Length: 429
Image 1 (spheres, rainbow, N blue to C red):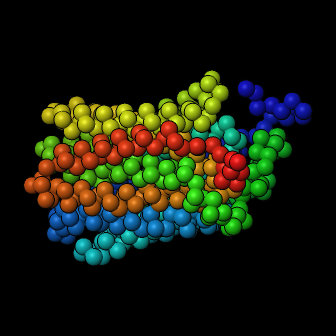
Image 2 (tube, rainbow, N blue to C red; image 1 turned 90 degrees about the horizontal axis):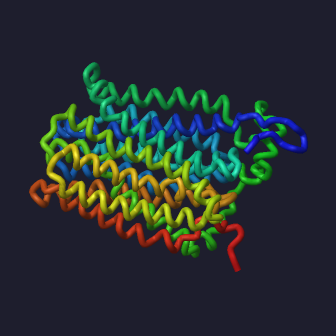
């Protein structure tokens, strides 16, 4: 399909794609800052004298804060626009990433990771808000796929990055360096981004025509229709499926390195290499889903059916692969199956976040924030539950893996009943 507009002959500029670039780079930074903690956990636990339950509680502190501040941060994006809110988010989380390296006890580390989670909350809802304003409908799902692919691959690169960093620096200095990266991103984003494409000097009239109506989505939407939001069955199911998918997925960025070293008997370097697989495969899952979904929707003539099928198949495939992984004895094959579980997991992601844009409309930031809140409540529950289960079963990790498979199976039942396209602004009669 040509970008050239038939009425004027003018070719649209491609300024909007810089929004995807900033989203991709921020997604990478977000996952470097998250996953670095899981990779450093064995060293931090040893230096600070932390038990499994305490380390699980520290992991959970991030998820709890992230969940609590998701809706307020998403709502602020709807009200003030993504630009100012994202700058606040990135500066805050960068400071507390650096501050992680200054901590001296369980309590100080717990508080710092809680504040880190509070700062990072709203990152992806506000990027989703930016997509809803800056991208035409046909590009939104693919943009979500690309962004989440980059986030996963940023996380996949983190374990070897942390191992390499620890060759030259201790964990305290490493967290300071990771925090500085966010400050650099914030500087360039502030200079370039505008909440309304019409305010950007590089956007021509033809590109604005592609984005017609986007100025109505940009900001000033503080009057969220909470009644319609909390009484929507589709939104409740969207929340539930994201809780279920996140319960399993948080294992990959919290306990996985410890699991590989304790349950699989691998050294730190080998476990770091294997820990890459779930996030690497997840990136491919996002890419495949983001690319194929619009093609399938066009062929069958239904975005609604496409998202339902992709969501159900993703959950079911992840459950099967996780069960197989838990039962395999050879670490390499077990991790390949866990990687395939993550691939299936992330087939769900672009459609779920695109549903937030379509269901939310002017309130995409709030709806995305509410969904991500539920996901990060799972991020609070799962690490703590994992630490408790392992500590009270004599180091048996398999039971925890089976609870993740069960969570995936429950998620399979959600998607057939979600309407992922009808806006809360225009409820059906």
